[in-house]
Amino acid sequence: MDALELMQARKVYRQKNRVCVLTGAGVSSESGVPTFRGEDGLWRNYNPMELATFEAFKRDPLLVWEWYQWRRQLIRKCEPNPSHRAIFQMENDKEHFLLITQNVDGLHKRAGSSKVVEIHGNIWDVKCITCDHVFTMDHDFENLPPVCDDCGSFLRPNVVWFGETIPRESLEKSMDALSSCDLLIVAGTSGYVQPAASFAQIALRNRATVIEVNIEKTPNAALVDHFFVGKSGEILPSLIAEQ
Ligand code: BJW
Ligand code: ZN
Image 1: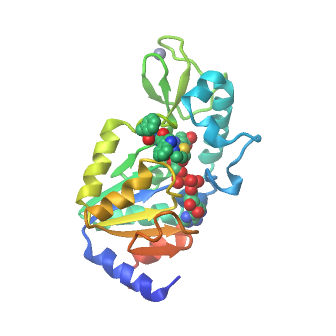
Image 2 (image 1 turned 120 degrees about the vertical axis):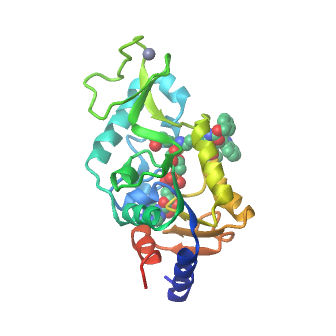
């Protein structure tokens, strides 16, 4: 990590009061949650990207549910890490703050974050594919796929799959924050999945400073003001440290 650049970024963080943060799977990897495009992201020789669609669910709801049940069981054992805690601290430090997360694991909320938009939904919520009822169901299901008490249709995880749109309220809140923030911090996202992949460019167009943290270079690395190669659990706490 470049110590001088870190000092500059710390100064930026101290000066800005309208802060937005965008996170991806990388911030939860230090809690033990597998990322999507990392080497540990595969299961049973299926490509997770091919499981995260409504077509896959219609074709084989049991397979998709087994994947989500496996992830729910894994995430249940994970705890928030220093990245989640540093981002919660940012919410306390700043007058205007919004966390936009692509993560469905709920670890930001468990770390205390309350000004958070989960743009890809939450793995603990389920939705009936017919009557659209949403329920929080954080226990294991005895029978997969689970069915709706009201209408008997299949329940699905209430997450956003490929080809589906981000819920309107979440997108509007995100766009408002991105167009009014003076600092955007992007952490642990590969920057391949739209619309989140465009958020840094939206903030830059609105003259915000953008700081990005990732263990490797991303497509936005050359565009942002400060890019730090390293673990978010190490860099985010030092970015907000007092001295
Ligand atoms: C660390 C670290 C550490 C590790 N510290 N860093 C062609 C062009 C443009 C768009 C499209 C297109 N074809 C289709 C589309 C649209 C599509 C899309 O973007 N596809 C691209 C892949 C090409 N997008 C959509 O469909 C979205 N909807 C939409 O656009 O609506 C309008 C529309 C509708 C219909 C047609 C077209 C447009 C919806 C996207 C929903 C994504 N859903 C998922 C699953 C959620 C549920 C679940 O969890 O099961 O969301 S997919 C998956 O990817 C998940 C993630 O939230 C998302 C992003 O992944 P993320 O977080 O970036 O993780 P990784 O694994 O990719 O990266 C981790 C990063 O961390 C890496 O960079 C590591 O280096 C780093 N890292 N450890 C710091 N310790
Ligand atoms: Zn129903």
